[in-house]
Image (cartoon, rainbow, N blue to C red; front, side, top):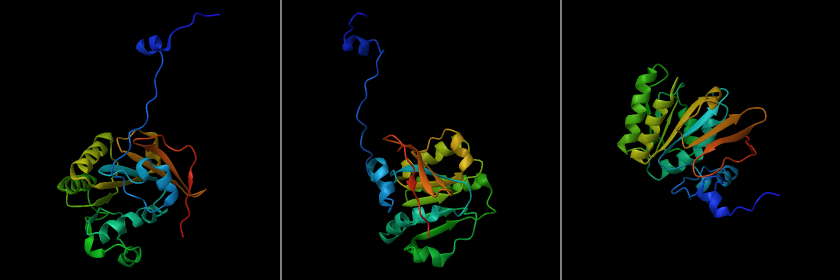
Length: 207
């Protein structure tokens, strides 16, 4: 039988790790989806931070995931910015989702060079003039994502980036990463600052 060792000695020698309670995430914005809010630290999208949506293909429900938040922010007078969307936004659909189109700004389009789109997204976020920004960064590396994360912090804005699902294999400085699956339709929280990612996927039904 081995000798008894005091726990304090093990902690002091760093042979045992001591868990600590997670710090609450301040200022999270409700997503408008109760099951997702319940799974995220703080109960919603992390404020002043970059959130990644990782998709197997475009149009899988990413806009429906964001619309409740964007609608609430625009109705409260916040500016919503879309930077270089890959498709022309269909205004009636955005309006039907509750977005105040007077507060919606589209900067660039599918033909915008990826470098210019990243620059525009970063400047919009840093300006402090938008409540939320959605971009589709192509071939964004860790450095580019980190710049978006820092810019979101500086401008106290919600930043969303949709990226291919394959990007989930690589680390990211984003505060939150959510993969949207088609079959079965579900959301998988891959990373969430301030807490552990839920083990189970969240069912996701798109009309």
